Length: 209
Ligand code: 5GP
Image (tube, rainbow, N blue to C red; front, side, top):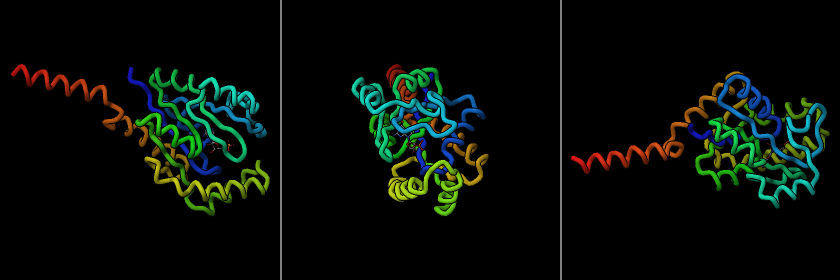
């Protein structure tokens, strides 16, 4: 079976990445979602093992020492990282594994996995982003401000991604994301074994002529 792709999805807080990931999982059979480890406190309604594995700083640093993370980063004063085992298991089962991670982690994935696909989710405008962050009601005004500043910084790195997805209409965005990921399966870089096989066979056949 062909190994699944690593699909990195980044975007400013408040662009609806979480909802998009859930919809990809429920609408299609192709995906698995990586559950990250973090040292931040759970938000109301979040469950350990579902949104994140919530751990202490000591537990996180132990996982780093064991080389158990594909990547990790410090974001707004907390650690976030992607556990390796689950991702590899699901890719081996042929699932495209979605990593919803921030920009530093995305660049680390790109360094290690040249065929990973990197998608940046954008709001239709900066004004809409601010309204969505405030409307979420789970963050204090200081955290909203911190996240808006962080978004302004992150906006500088968008060109390092392969694709953007504009989340204006949720249904349209889910469909476009799915199509983008499916198209990525047809890149030469994601088919190198097949290409090498055909190339070698062609050489062999040419010799025989
Ligand atoms: P939040 O605290 O809002 O859940 O997440 C904050 C940021 O951390 C988001 O941009 C999210 O995508 C990112 N993030 C979540 N998990 C990981 C991870 O495993 N690695 C990295 N590098 N970033 C992550």
